[in-house]
Length: 209
Image (cartoon, rainbow, N blue to C red; front, side, top):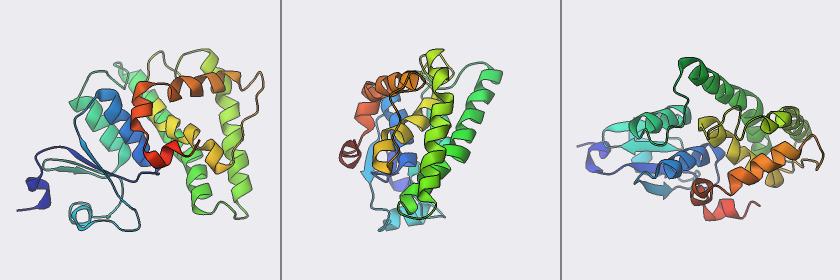
């Protein structure tokens, strides 16, 4: 009998400091899903994860016989299996745009975050900080047009962006207090005060700000 067949409840193997794990924890909290969250040291991946995930990576979501190890797949699966509240728009065009926003967040900003986490004192670190800061300031005005990222409702896009914004101070990225950045600061405050976001934080993440 395989490992997946022995667990009767959903289990999320999470890195307690990883922004990719954090985005899924926000979805779990937003949906109010009953789940066992097991915080795992990424330097000591347990045998159970190694047996069910061919890459031996975190995060890993186990739901009975189903094993998922890519966060965008996890988030969409959870949104479809637990449809209330919905975290993707109903209409195909809006859904496609949301998926593309997530793709751009990963290509542009997640890449900078990963670079800074891997080598915060390297030659490329300041370039990554500037890239991340400039990219966020560049889109700051859009938050004056809608309560959330290009949407009237909280979506998976916000779930991906919130962990990055929470980590800015830790990464040494300082956003100025200016007229241009004010909508972004207000958006951040709104996200960080959201009950699901507060619930999603691990003790280690709470210490980041």
